[in-house]
Length: 339
Image 1 (cartoon, rainbow, N blue to C red):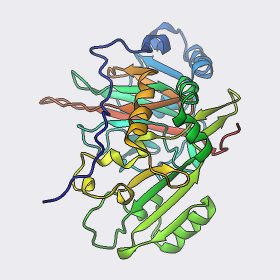
Image 2 (spheres, one colour; image 1 turned 120 degrees about the horizontal axis):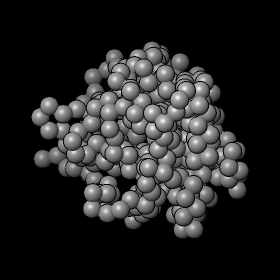
Image 3 (tube, rainbow, N blue to C red; image 1 turned 180 degrees about the vertical axis):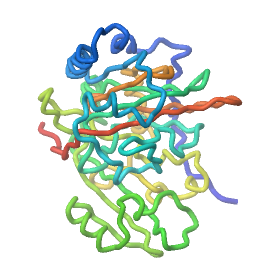
Image 4 (cartoon, rainbow, N blue to C red; image 1 turned 180 degrees about the horizontal axis):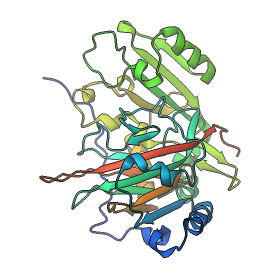
């Protein structure tokens, strides 16, 4: 009998059908029908995004996710590809990706800043929705400024400040037979040789190790906070969802030790997070949640440093679907913390 390895911490997503959310999406909402010209609408979007880092557009008329860049380009002048990303992410059209992807509906995709586990990340995310279940399927956004202020008052926040974090990746070889497969290093980085991977690792200051069957281990040690030049302060930039617990309910990946799962996270010196720390890490985001209960045609624009996001589990009834796309852009190289 296969042993399932998992945390026993309480890591359920908040249920805002029973409790009032801390933040109200209406405070970030812009109704596109209220503007007589596209120029006036774009000016309002840019101003609101600069002020709050979060904008929710309603009544956009979006019906085709391949046209999401028509809206995303209001803020994004330099789109990014999903190179180096952790999830298998289908492409809808150039630079527009399927948010739903291959993640099981029944898992909680924990709070995270997109691609924070890489030395280069998008500063802006644009999500568009064209179909949503009758019940469930929302996205949770989290005010990362408020999260940072709270976590820095705690022992966990100070440990993250002092130790930093280490991101671990375990990638299989597309040309080898492996018992458990999630993502191949060829697909993650768009390469086909070890030499190309080693060049990337040297450029990014990663430690790598080649294992049997050409499996690749990547270790990236960095600060847990990122300095935001616009705000002039450090913001938490550590995706709790990068912890190996992400796979606790995904067989057969949940039979592997955490450090052997497709991705995992420790403190920068290799110290593992305790169950209590992980549970607190997840819960602190709940205090600053902004649930987005999607409707077809809605678009959310998030500053990837000022806002984290997550996806609770959901269920599809007969005939239902959840169709969301994402455009990433405005690449930024990690600055690290400046305490």
